[in-house]
Image 1 (tube, one colour):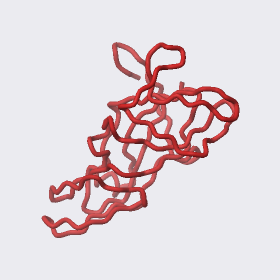
Image 2 (cartoon, one colour):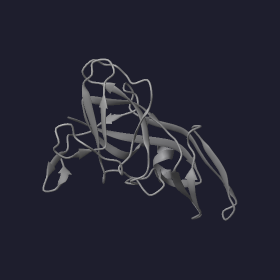
Image 3 (tube, rainbow, N blue to C red):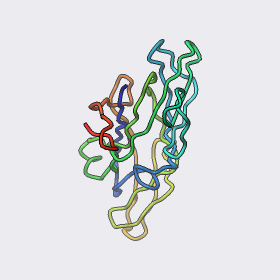
Image 4 (tube, rainbow, N blue to C red):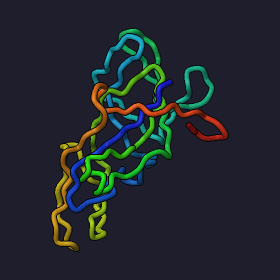
Length: 183
């Protein structure tokens, strides 16, 4: 079992609180990434979508998970279960100082995420209080104008951390106790 924390940062101009549309635990926010089989090292050619609201039964029949995927090379099955409650929005101060904000924890068994794709469904708030919803980050940037503050609002330099599996940060192992994940 490997718990992986998706960490993001960006250069924010006159914006703060960059996060999925309904917050970091948005059940309908799609996370797109490629998966690497931990058995044979094969990387999926297509991106895989994982959402909190979509669950499937585990192969052994004991519970549910958010993704069950079979490796096309060695035929081993792996699972990814999302662990809500650990994410935070990317604030202006964090972006300016180059710090990363955690978005979501993934409990990975037999699979490793190796690439994350930014897409649609983000929101942020201008420094004057105007909310910008349904932001599309698939092009790697966003630009608009805040009429209230009369300033441009910009998101550029989107990055995920760290290098190697280049887009992920491993975190402490979380343990399921007392009806929740703890460490």
